[in-house]
Image 1 (cartoon, rainbow, N blue to C red):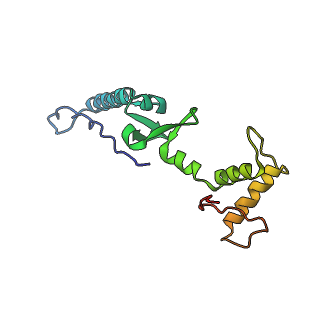
Image 2 (cartoon, rainbow, N blue to C red):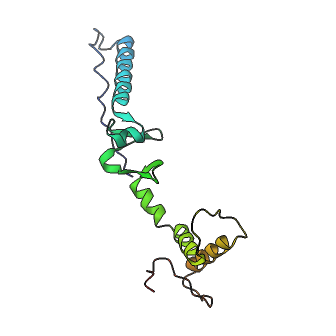
Image 3 (cartoon, helix red, strand yellow):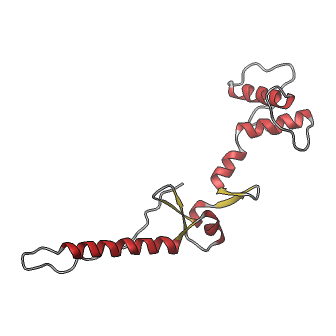
Length: 155
């Protein structure tokens, strides 16, 4: 993600100087309050939630305290139709080793549908074996070979 420098109008001119060359404190306070008000109005007008940015009703969404992201730069998508996430984050999750190992273990065991993953279950054991074999730099594999992460399933 990229940090965008949002350009807000500068604090307004603090009014004329008095005969001693000073501006009055009240002029400064009033000008600062006006500037804070303008900043709040800008935020209300342009900054919204990720859903509003995805719909196109707002331009930016807030991330943390001072982080804004523009719609065309961030590329928001739905993850499985539920949560709104960045495209980059979605792609990274689909390419993760854990996802790969789980898909491969389900395929090898012939599991279809929902199966909870718990310690001691065959699915969990197979998945952990695949993860271990892929984290070790192509070490010796067991008798029944396992597809390594990044290789294609051409057989």
